[in-house]
Image 1 (spheres, helix red, strand yellow):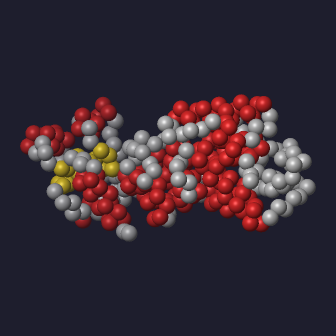
Image 2 (cartoon, rainbow, N blue to C red):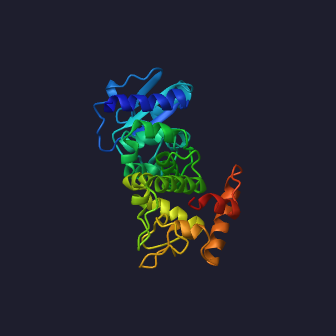
Image 3 (cartoon, rainbow, N blue to C red):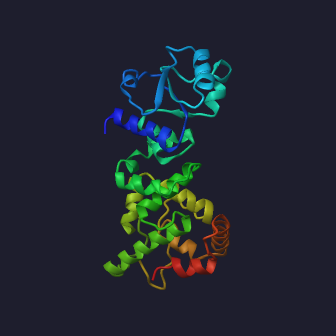
Length: 293
């Protein structure tokens, strides 16, 4: 899709799907200076603020055509508040940017423009139309960066809900099915790397979502290791679930290997239950669903 088509689609969404009356478009690098005259937006008037004075524009917007739809294009940066003659109008209108990350924000319906950098950093995830369509069904307008990461992980893991409890359980289930298919392969060093033990987690790492995942796990369950892993390959009773470096996999921590771990996990379950009325999460239900079968 060309830049013109993308811009046209994004602006049409703002005006005709979201019902915006006035949209400001500041283009300080003048990348789209020659594109603006080519835009044909049904029922929308384009005003170039480099050609029309601010007072003239204000009178037209608020007195002469108070119900008209307007695209206000300026080839300059957005002015400071004290220098912006159209500030009162800008505050109840929408802003538009034409870089790919900003267009994605518009398409996802996200209102936090500070997410542009975050979305740009996750561009590998958004390259596929099917992933983009799936996450569109999950996002909320006021989502923050951590919410987006969690929902992207849900798409990659094919989880039915984007809550962390469900993400971890879905990933563990995939690992356990893989172990059952391969058969037990007990080794002296029984820990697997997350990518090796889970093709899904390999995809999570591919899209740079592994660090956010482990940060969520740390914040919720208190699990933290220098080299975090998902679970042991060995299923023998005598396996200590630690490698030579003394690292504990997530599965052992969540199973309550120590009193401290049990307390952290129970607290995490309580927090998730408080955040979601749909969650029926207790430590006992976690134990029954998180341990390898």
